[in-house]
Amino acid sequence: MPTANSVSYSKEKIRYAVLSLFLAQGLCFASWASRLTDIKSSFDLSDLLHFGLLVTLQPIGKFLAIPIVGFLMQRIGSKNTVLVSLGGFIVSLFFIGLTSNIYILGTFFTLFGICWNMTDISLNTQAIEVERMYGRTIIATFHAGWSIAACAGALIGFLVINLNVSPGVHFMLVTVLCLAVVVYSFRFLLDDVASDRKDEQTQKEEKARFDWKVIFSETILFQLGLVWLFALIIENTMFDWSNVYFESTIHAPKTMQVGFLVFMVMMTAGRLLANYAYRIWSKPTVLKIAGTLIFIGFFTSSILIGHAESMALKVVVNSIGFMLIGLGISCIVPTIYSIVGEKVKSIPVGAALTIMSGISFVGPLVTNVFVGFVSKHWGLEIAYLSVGFIGICILLIVSLSKTMKRG
Image (tube, rainbow, N blue to C red):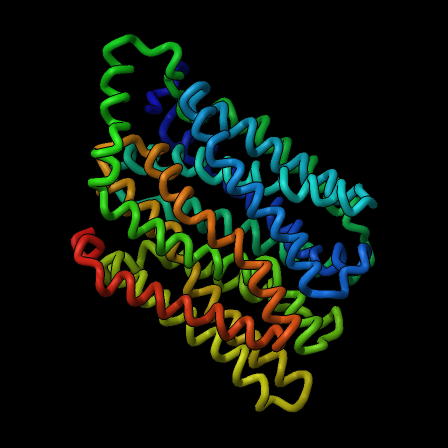
């Protein structure tokens, strides 16, 4: 469990260090996502199913990360795991921009996914402990910071695409900036007591906390894990296919391919407003509103596009749909993490997040194959409509769960 830093940094410095690493991860991610259409074109992946198979390697990497991050968190703690995982995430981006071989590209897509999930778990473990240190809900601000950086990354990506800057140069500049942030901020993170340095009594206590009977008694973990699974399907659909949707379905020129950008803008706005939403509604109610907005957004983009004749109107209609999806998905993950931090006391935070990650990994794993397959046979707009019904599933899970209502 994280402890006070040996050099007694203030909690503000610790908080802003964690926030800066969320910023670095968000910028790195959005830089990658904003150039997927260029990667698709440079490797001549005109078949959407083939493109879907390529980007599926990233969630496969996320699945492979689960046992790795569990081992590292126990052996070296979340602080050092953040350094390893976020550093690997950033360096993977750099090599994705350099490679011209499809097999090497696939290897780095997989490594990108491994480091992505490891960063998610270790960095959010730090964030939850900082929230506990403050004694109030602040985790949404970390995720808002991630979204702000991702929004900036999407805007930068949009600009460099139109300036004909290659992904290699783009990713190199982002790599240098993000690595500098990691090197500076690492010292301020909360220290962990690695398992091999704990006294015998502490090890016995933590072993008891990992008792599977205790874990399975935490019904809320499995319910939240299922919501997280559905949220990841939606996120991955939007992250990986937004610009492809504007390119392949709307046939918008590059100067009008703003799908990923508007989605990220509203995702950012939603996370900035999350703490205000918690003061008005309970956290389960926030999740239900989110599921409803997601369904309406996908319905707008997939169905109403048929009633738009001009290119400008198509872009506007789809932008509205993407904005609603962004607003809906924005609060789901930080709300889940916050509920875990507040209500799950019988097992360590890192273990809880790893368990939930194990449940939810299926979402990203099947998303791109599903979207690619449906797109190949019935069109990308039908694939989007299908994903939209997952918003209804989130609404139903939260509404029918007695444990969630108590959470």
